[in-house]
Length: 179
Image (cartoon, rainbow, N blue to C red; front, side):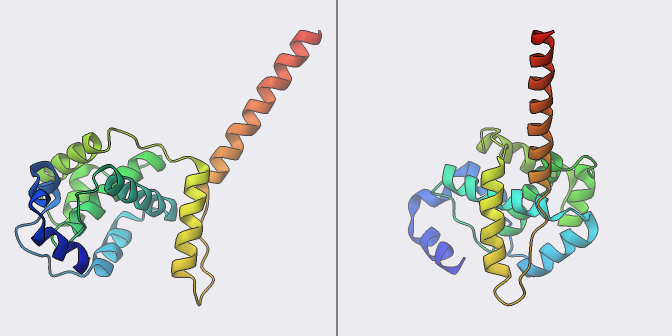
């Protein structure tokens, strides 16, 4: 993050207006770890939500290589990606107003962040199973160096159910043809 802040100060293109949507006027005094713990405590989002949010952040930075994560934008980027990932992955979700309170800003700001993020992502939110698995493995390696932590792989189960349903449909079509 320090490297990104240094680059942003020296580059004239870093002040692009739509990339500044995540910028705070002041650097939040809460650490990233404390902020993530707060989000986890109050939203109770499952591990797969955080993996998908990580994919979104990675994609966002890939779509906008001029964007630099800094101490002034990381908190808003995190809460936005976690909220969007929660809506995409989980069946039951909190309202934007609740995420705004957890994140420490107004509902109007949360709505604006979500909308800007979706447009800047080109609404490309789908995360296929192989991408999800690769991010899980990467996070497990990073986090589990000493503890052997494993991330719940709920997306794999959904993919397996879909493939079984597809097999059943094919089987039913084959039996209808042979009868």
